[in-house]
Length: 575
Ligand code: SF4
Image 1 (cartoon, rainbow, N blue to C red):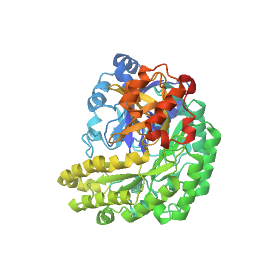
Image 2: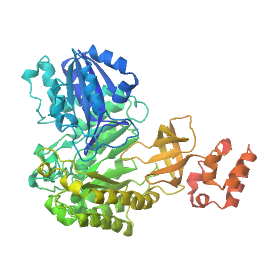
Image 3: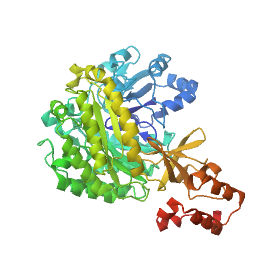
Image 4: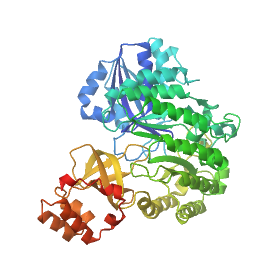
C-alpha cells in the first residue's frame, strides 16, 4: 500500500493547518492507514512542497494506490507560512492521475471550496467528477473503513462520523510520525491538538451561523488520550502545541455539560490535563489554547478565574483566548441566538486582563483575549456597525488589552439558520463592513499594538520565516503570533529582538542583544540618533565602555526604561 497525503492546508474556526501549524487531518489519516496496513508507505507532501517539484509529486502519486487531498480554507486570507491549494490545482492535479484512487477530505469536501471571504464559490458536488470519493464525514473513520473494505467504495459510508474518540485517539498516536515529513519539522512546527467535539450550547440550538451544535452531544477526549498523543509528538521532536480544536477550552470536561447551555468550568480536569502534558513534554516551548466562549467566563466568573490561573501555571506566555463576540449589537446577538451579550463580553475581557496581562519570559502578556466579529448576521443594520465601533472604543477607554480583532464575513453553511439567509445581508452592508474593517486596522490596531508589545521591549524566540525587501520576517510560535520585521539578516534561524517601531499589525525590531560592532546603520539608527549611529560606525571596533558613554549621553529612552536584567544580556565581549 502506497498512499500520498497532499496537505492543501485548512483553516477553520476551530483548527488551523497552514504552516507552521499541522492540523489533525494528516496525522489522524496516516494513523488510520498504518492501523490497517502496518507497513504502508505514507508519503506526506505540503502543497508548497508539491509545487516546488510538481513533476516528482505527480510521478509518485501516479504510482500510488491512494491520493488523499486535504483542503478547505473557510476564511481565505494571506498566510506567511504557506499558500493554500488553489481551485485550479485541486482540480487539475488529480486529473493527471489515471489509476490512483483519489479522495478529497477536509472543509472543501464537507462545505465546498471558497476563494474569497464569506462565499462558498464551489460546492463539494463540483469535485465529484474529479475525485473518486468526497469525504463528508470524519476522514480518518471513512478512510479506515475504506481500507478495511479493500478500497471498495460501494461498501462504505462517506458521511460517517466518529461516535467516540476510541479509534481516533489510537490513530492520533499511530499517525504522529507523519510530522517527521513536514518541512517545518525541527524548526517551528506546531501541532493543533483536539480536546473535544461539539458545542455545549447545542442544547439551545447554538449560533445561527455555526455548524458545531449539529454534532449534538459534546464528546470529550480523555486527558490520558490527549497526553499520549502529545507525548508521542514530543518524542518525535515537536516542542510546540496548541489546544485549539474545541469550541471553548474553558468548558473542557465542564460540570453540567450536555445538561446546561453554559456548564461550569472544571479547573480540576484542566489542571489534570496540563499536568499530564507537562509530564510527557517537559521541555516544550509553546503550549497555547485557542477558542474560549466569553459567556462561560461572564456566567461563571469564579470558576473561570480559577481555571485561568491553572492555565497560567502550565502554559507558555503569549497565549490568546479568542472570544466569539460576533456582534456588539444586542438585538443582532438575540436574533442569532449568540447566548452572550456584548456587556458580558466586556466583563470577560476584564477578567482575562486582570489575570493574564503580566508579561512572561518571551516578552508578551501571559494570556490576552482576542475578539472575533462575524458580519452579515440576521438583523444587522448600519447601526450595528456604530455599536461595533463603540464597543471597541469602550475597550480603549477602559484601558483593556486585546491581542487581536478578527473580522470576517459570515459564511452561510448548510444545516445552519444562515444557510437560508445567504450572503444578502453582508452584500447590502458591504460598504459599512469595509469602513469598519479600515477603522479597526487604522485606529484600533495602531493604538492597541504598542500597548501589547511596547517600544524597546524584548521579544524572545522568534523563528525566521522569510524575507521582505531588506527585512527578515520572523514570528514566535503560537496562537496569533506577532509578525516582526527584523532589520538585520541573521545567520541563525531563531532570534531575540528589541521592538523599535510599530506598523499597523506588525512591528519592526532589531536583533537583541545589539552587536554595536556589526549592526548595520539601519539597525543602529532605530536605537540611537543618526548622528550617533554614524559615530559608532566610525569608531569601530568599539568597546563596551565607549558604548555606555555614547548611550548615556544620548539619554536614550529605552536605555532608561529597560529593566536591569535586560541590560545584563548585552554581549560585552561582542562590543
Ligand atoms: S458558541 Fe456559537 S459559535 Fe461558538 S461553537 Fe457554540 S454555536 Fe458555535
